[in-house]
Length: 264
Image (cartoon, rainbow, N blue to C red; front, side, top):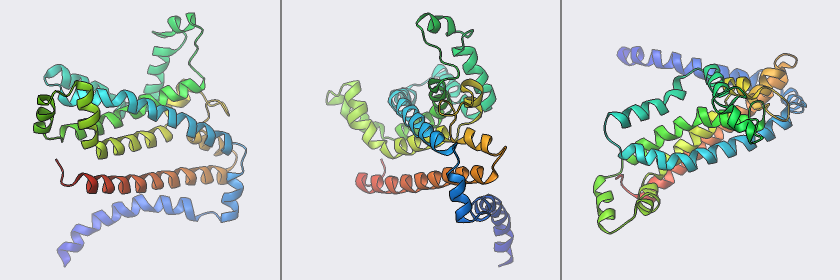
């Protein structure tokens, strides 16, 4: 009994530390105060912008990330390993560094800036910049989940499909993707959640302009300077959205597992 308590105590302390701030976020304001906070002028534009940009960025990540994750899962050798490591760097790179890197790549004086400007395209401090910042920070989460999901597929199934004449695209779309669906769904959800919570790279690369680049995290930052309840209400919206996302992912994964039967 004493040994169990000794083992449980550290975990209980960590659980309490993780849960207490969330309880404080939800329980330190009355419903009326939270409703007034949600009525703040910053909330509606930021919510619309976040919904739009995260939907676009997640779509881009999934469409471009599936074939890349498939290639990474099949590739072997030092160069493939190096490529996978480089593509995961945005996970550990500080958001401010990501913002500076995006400016140096796509800013007016950046690597691609003159070519883009010649085409009449100016990306920094625009809604497009928000989308690119979200793609940059969120894509590695999808790639990581996608590569792991594809690697769990039994190689014998791939060989059988190839022996039956499946083309590379057919093999990916009709064999690999259905088998890796749970991992791909989870990766897309994590990618969307990361895009929704993106702050630093967006602030550095896109700025903080209401209705143009001010997403929900930036609205929290702005509201905190003048209206704590508005910042608290927006924060609570993000927590509820994240909780709903995790719950939906768990349900989706459970249904996929039941539909696919025993893991391959």
